[in-house]
Image (cartoon, rainbow, N blue to C red; front, top):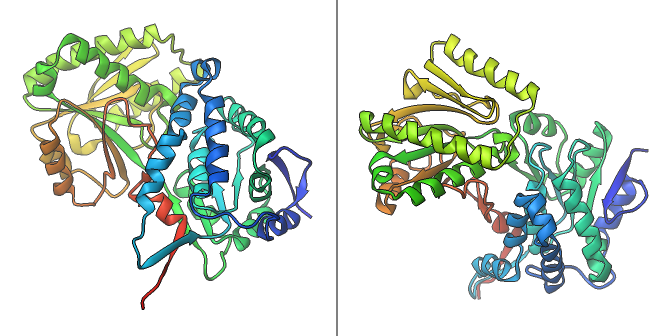
Length: 410
């Protein structure tokens, strides 16, 4: 029989059938409900551990996670679930989460929101996860010490190898399967059937971009420009620019001549920020970047390539429509100038997720969103917020997805 390694709560390896039976049983203290205070209290204690100065300094992304799980933020998220007098909201049931290995904290957001919706959960943590993911698991187990027993009874995080029998068993048992990590992961996991009443919530391959208003850049103070570049650095260099919401191409919107001046200043500032952060590019990554950049040029899509050391590479695109959507390596930024955001709206595809912006007015961004009309770009955020997770992600209201409604008509 196939076994899984129990990471949270920490414990001996367990057979998958036993795991499913435990999560499907009736907890000793009664089932969880939507917004259950026992879950809220546990998440708040867990968040405090992530916000400890030593942890936050070592893994800044965990500080963002800790902020997301503060009591006030949880209350704000739960407040959106009010159904009024004619409907009642309940947990959906067992949720099976399959997160990617390249973004160490995404599984916590997914799991936490599902737990807040009152669900029992099983999360597969990749054996390749390390660093921040290990710190998260340690903090979860530490927070469990004085948590209500129902947390340990209903929540599991496990690791197992390429074992189709385990995946099949967990898929067959769940009411909702949450698949992160790209088209290939979605396709592979869909080979394992769900119960007829269950369904998938998928997060396939996405591409994201950044846009700077030339006029907005010119109007900004030196301090505002530097702050924007710091935000762009955080959006791009955390997770090696491999997160779905990390910008892969930078568009300048406005006058072409002014845009070229802005690019030079921006590149210089980015180099200073990268140096100040002591970001190091491993040799293999440096080679990857050059292979990718020259590959774009060989396809006739770039006219100029510049490498500022190993940390920053820029490519001038021949045509904005030739924007590469694949990952080219951390710190690699194709660039193009557009006359207006309306031009970019015409380039958007369904797989495009986040647009990080600087220098635009709210009315300009709303006009852009209306022009796109849901064909892509599910998030428009300021520089520095591309990686900030929210309860609405990829166009899904996750707390709603993790729960179900019973209507009452009299």
